Amino acid sequence: RVPLLQAAGKKNSFNLLELTESELEEQFVRGDGPGGQATNKTNNCVVLKHIPSGIVVKCHQTRSAEKNRKIAREILQEKVDLFYKGEDSDIFKEKKASEKKKQEKKRRAKENLERKKHLKEMQQLDKK
Image (cartoon, rainbow, N blue to C red):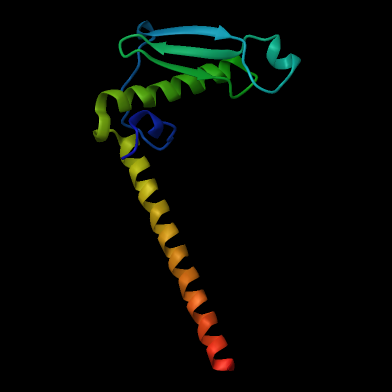
């Protein structure tokens, strides 16, 4: 089972719950991680909180505060959608389909490896 909030991050879903600005609390803080002076002196990391659900998103993907604001809102919208809709959410369904596809690919790779191993054994037996 996929944890609901970890499924956020998909970009192909269109049927998301709308967020209103009155439900959001926004802060600009200093980012963390690598970047040295560029990171340590600028407040371009966005912390966005959805007050009704209590979900908090922190975004520091770019150096631009405006881009980070936009990205944070997209991520928060997806997480709020997952929070309220649960398994009925488009994001959850996409994530589940993606996991299924990944498992199928892994299974096929394992089968191919077994086939190659078997073929190699047969070739060695033929040489003897």
